[in-house]
Amino acid sequence: MSDSREDRPFDTVDWRRLLSSLGDDPDRPGLRDTPRRLERAWQHWMSGYKQDPAELLTVFEDGAEEYNELIVVRGIPVYSHCEHHLAPFFGTATIGYVPNQRIVGLSKLTRVVDVFAKRLQVQERLTRQIADAMMTHLDPIAVGVIIRCRHLCMESRGIRAIGEETTTSAMLGGLLTNSALRNEFLALDHPR
Ligand SMILES: [Zn+2]
Image (cartoon, rainbow, N blue to C red; front, side, top):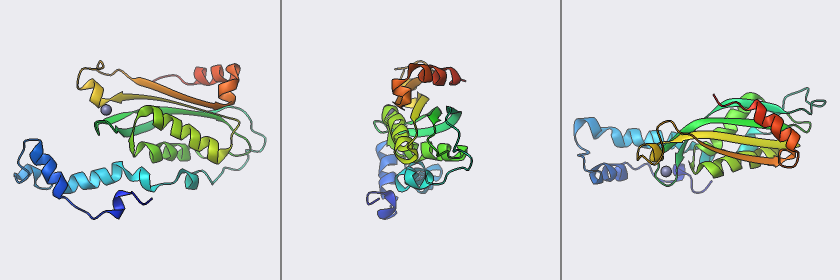
């Protein structure tokens, strides 16, 4: 992608200015290597911009031809950053889908979540993008995504109670139209 961080020169000057503007001394020993660490850490946290979910969702497991029941995977880790404050939000995702000939390995679901979570996000869009990618690339009969996250920007400023989770969901295909299927999905999604 043309706007990925990799296309721009490695530059620690802005991180130094950030530290200064926060009121600290970027030249004191504890902060001297912080710009370099920040650069590396943010490269990792934003690495989703360089990944394409289509590549992850093109390899299918064998033996799915006859399987048309709901598959639900819970507890998929979510580590993301809100685009309003660059603050972490983190929690877990549940993904459910009814395959249409195509089943992906469980590790692929974790990586699809990561592709979108490792970008600047809002939780609602993250949820929707995961569901849309599943729908586009797997062509399933139904997809549902539920995400529960704690947002440091809200908790640390007292806008939300400590430990309070924000829940978002996206239902597509049969999970949108078939209430029995949706109830089955919701019953299989137990919060930890
Ligand atoms: Zn925020």
